[in-house]
Amino acid sequence: MSQVISRVTKNAREVIFLSLSEFKGRRLIDIRVHVPGDQEGEWVPTRKGISLALGLYPAFKEALGELEEALLTQGLLDKEDLEPQE
Image (cartoon, rainbow, N blue to C red; front, side, top):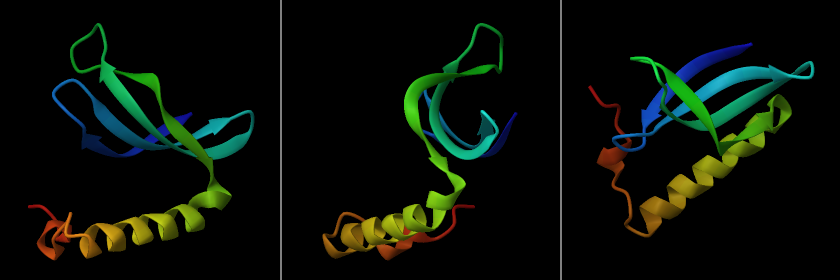
């Protein structure tokens, strides 16, 4: 079972899928690179990615916030970059 929550285009041939999945009875957050499959519109997961136990989500979210702050502080990202895209 896998439920795709969101997708982020990495480049012309790769898309990062953010999904909720299950493995051996455990629910996971899966962040994985997918590439085009043999059929039109099909995406196939690669080994590139990570799976996190649901219990790690709060720490992961906090770490992303720390990364965002570092990017802003170092001038690698502007506040405008954080506004939702239309």
